[in-house]
Length: 423
Image 1 (cartoon, rainbow, N blue to C red):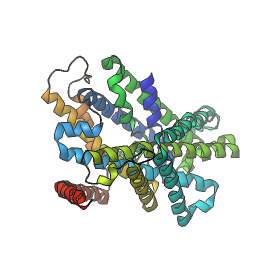
Image 2 (cartoon, rainbow, N blue to C red; image 1 turned 60 degrees about the vertical axis):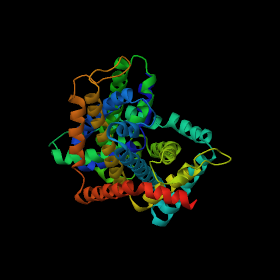
Image 3 (cartoon, rainbow, N blue to C red; image 1 turned 135 degrees about the vertical axis):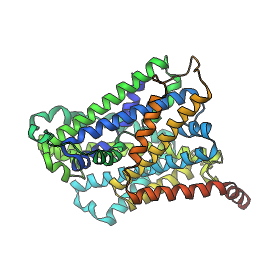
Image 4 (cartoon, helix red, strand yellow; image 1 turned 90 degrees about the vertical axis):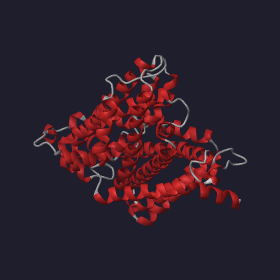
């Protein structure tokens, strides 16, 4: 149950507070199909993470799995894509946070004030984490304890206001529409792979890991579907028009103004907790990548003399989050984050296939997904199809980005030497 609880805690972050309106706008009462699709995909991907994690036991997560299977070039791409996904996610959450605050205080809809808010937000979180991991963990733990309360209260007490007419499915959405919305909705499911980082310490992994994955994904999926159902059932078509703070408008309908206030505060706290957790953990990936010469940026490996934290990496990451938040909105950043992490997931699923071909029989301590190659192959097919739903300009943008990263990789040894010589 401990592993299941960890996975649930990681998956339920900030996205579910903003996404119900976007999903309703795209699919209406057919929204459930996108949730089921995303639930299926994350289950398959997490099974792949569990298997490859039991074979490649050194630290580093997806980066280590992919580099071990396909070499340093793909390891380099993995680090950069993972950080891009995390930074874009933080930018999306920061935009959702200021949008939610703006529903209570309209002055925050001003672009100037939004940018000022982002400066203060990322500045404070960066400062807390530069001061030390203890302070950062205290913020994360405090916020984690209370983030589920408003969601559970909304689901439990909203049924009296639900209209069945709002939930009737008059027409099923097309596969193309489900794919496009699922690409955005997947933002609410990503991140669960980090919860499997302790899978090597799980007793009887062959039995307990699939059980934990099943319990956590089904639990999160049920909660998400219930949230979408009560939101659509209470607000109907108007849900799609309340994209800044949809769940608070549902709570306002059910509980009155006090419900709106409580849900808004709960959403803001959950989003703040998500940002705190990211700024606590992701800069340490940059630090390790610089230390291992994966990234030709030696300043990222510097440690603060007093606080013993990777302060340059923290400052660089917080600054990147601020810049992306300032130049993009929630939906745009959520798509970039989902697409980036899906490319990483694709590498992990292919790594499962590669490692199986290298070693036919698992050892007693290794976990192997039942069903032969069915799960990793199905994961690859679904991920590729989901990525095919990117808009043409987004697809071209990612292609150009990967080409630039390839040139950087080919030149990184020369860049690294120049940096070392200039110091």
